[in-house]
Amino acid sequence: MHEPPMFLSFLGHEYLAVGYAAVTVLLLILMGKIATSNLALVPAGIQNFFEVVLDVIMNFMEGVMGKKNARRFFPMIATFCLFIFTCNMMGIFPGMYSATSNLNITVACAVIVFVTVHFFGVKEHGFKYLLHFMGPVLWLAPLMLPIEIIGHLARPVSHSLRLFGNIMGEDTLLIILAGLVPFLVPLPIMVLMVFTSFVQTFVFVLLAILYIQGSVEHGEDH
Image (cartoon, rainbow, N blue to C red; front, side, top):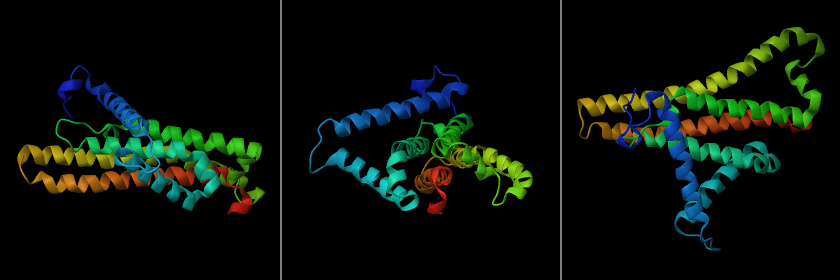
């Protein structure tokens, strides 16, 4: 496990990920405050950066979920994008730590998605939401119900383990290479980590979008 960086050295290993997750949240809040402190009709600097990023996220969501659901779930999905990508990137810098390389953080994110999926599924459909678990025809319900329940319970497991495993593997590889050959050799790995940080963020968010859309869509939307 990573040694705690100096400015978080008072934290034990078990709280290191939580500490860095809190640092990430505070950093994003601060950047958001700076970006919105002096709004302009023609954006520039950090305001322009955030507008471009958020516009890309919104356009992607509209392409998958439609405009109505994209606007409905945009705050949550955009927050996941910014939080997870920032956490992933932190491990690239010397003395820093990726909060998403800790299973507690990725499980927390996956559980939020899981609860959101079923909360809005019930809210959208009422008790008819249970028909999602019964299969296409009623006589298959005894077979389909346990399969669907197991499948839905497996979602947060795979959702969290995928992100955790990839980021932890990258960070571990970088630490090993930096310890063996501290100059130049780790640089290609660091460049690759920037790409995979984006990819892992995209995969987590895409799965969240698909899970949510599958729970709130109506029959005529298929």
